[in-house]
Image 1 (cartoon, rainbow, N blue to C red):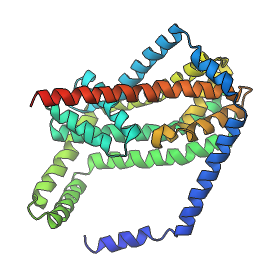
Image 2 (image 1 turned 90 degrees about the vertical axis):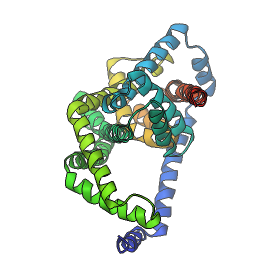
Image 3 (image 1 turned 45 degrees about the horizontal axis):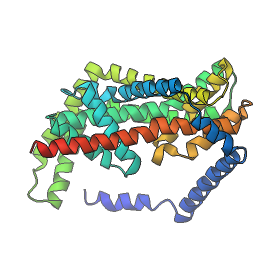
Length: 344
């Protein structure tokens, strides 16, 4: 193990620092170009008017849509963690989402585990379910551009940027899914990893459990994960695919509510464009700015929809799926911590 560490460090130094700086500069330049392209055509007075003139029934529809979205987001946790109710899965999910939005990872994971333990969920069940749900979430997120490209190609035309996005992110989804399927079947590999991990931890903390204990833990974790996936994995995968459709549908609703015409051609374009840029939601603040500019560029290139309407709809969408859940999540964390203090 000690011999492998220098090799790993040497491998990390293979990428020259000037190249890393150049890549960052290109990314910043592309992002700035997209943002300037979007903002130049925006009438902010019109945006403000659109945001302040949502009717009561439109707000009610968005609230219902948000509840449906949150329930689907929490579905994998409820399915893959034994003993976790659907309501508590939603509570845990909205609280962790709030932390993930305003604090760096792995703060959201630490909070999830703490909440699950406070509800009496077994540690192995909690860790296994969280790992599986997170992996499936990222598989779906990376697969979305490929689905968006295929839908756009079937409904309208071949579009090279969509094809490249689908190919690159789709390859990542295949690799991640392949790794998950291998891990669920590789009991011997889990045992080997457990022993190596045990030795490494024991070198740092001599009082910690030895390799035999860690081997048993890893094999138990692997077998438990494989069992849950064989029982309910297909439902969890189905929920993630449903989530992509719901996410796109919520954005279409927001765009429609600010005055964007929702004919069949425009709706297909909106949905496909959102699916193609969906991996950008994994960036900090759900890709605020980058996702918005890229999405607006795709939609405006294939339609006569004005940038002002797109910006207004995207702002409504961010308030609905980002700002409101963060406020609710912080309130949930406060209530949970108070109850935890009272029960001690």
